[in-house]
Length: 508
Image (cartoon, rainbow, N blue to C red):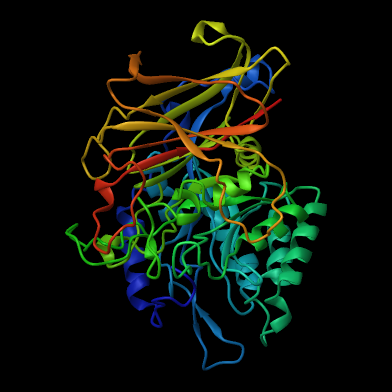
């Protein structure tokens, strides 16, 4: 839900609900995240100690609280109304994130007139209290940036001593709705480029992901506030800051009534052109914009978030953080390593808890047999560099289905795993390009094609006769669809589940 969408002008009901949730939300006691399932996989850039301690940690970088406010515009400047858009205290969000298995979240309230002051004076102290109340969840400070000349972005601030000052400076200088009176110069691409240049010069660099990037698109490939050219311009300016976009947006409970029955709501709040299997068209369209960016060699990652404002059982369109969407980062349970994992693309995403582990790796192979694989492994976000003798690459996919039912009480099953490849052909001559014609499903694997080892689904795929740079990524589904289909209004979000890895790059 964007600022101003379905905004509440009276915070009384929200306050009463927050008091109730503060009592019933389970804020007493803590749960150690170290108990999350899984065994760390090798990361070729780090030593044995890092390999042992890293694991797949699920999180959510797009979570709203009562500090996503409404405004009383009868005053000058407008008076913020807590709970006017999203309604829950930060500690309630964190408690529910812990309940649904998350190890980390980012507080990303969106702004408005002079919201930077509210953030510094009220939200930040509330975040510190939430960190004390729910220590079992690492809680980053950030915001949903009202992005100049674009839609929204998750701005994630490093956990450092001056984190409050970093966000205040960035929000007050660059969030397009922060000035009062309004300043049109804040809503220009030049302002966004300036913001990225400033972020790049910071000693502690934030991370930025574009949120719900095609929500304002009116058709397939007919984009709205976020465009391919903008993403290229941003990434050219600060590639270590802007790291990708939401593959699966939030608001996935838009088709659910408070009792869980279906209503004709648009999945993800995409009321113009729909999501596809719960994912944004920029990600879900095979050979689409994401593949176009990867085909330039850009390190551009996808995530999945809740965009939690108001839970569907209270009339909203949202799941709790972690209840439906999860972004898994391969990292130590440590703020800095999680942020670096997001920056480096050590990420896979899933909806509906279809899986809870995805280990994708690649090794060089000198012959046409899997037995010919040799040398070091690389994994998501990394690059495998081949020698002249290496013509092939063995790709291994290890997937685990959760041992427990998901939040809907279901035990969904993976019906197919797709290995997807695309060539890297260099910078696009057309900055608006949103296709990569070299992208293909190189292999489709069902239960008859894979084997199980120690409870994991294992797929091995040989990419043959590599004659230039390329990338490999993986997706899977609980459906029989060969490609994700547009989601009709009223679609059951629990019946159409997908997961996606981020890519491995291959260079020769």
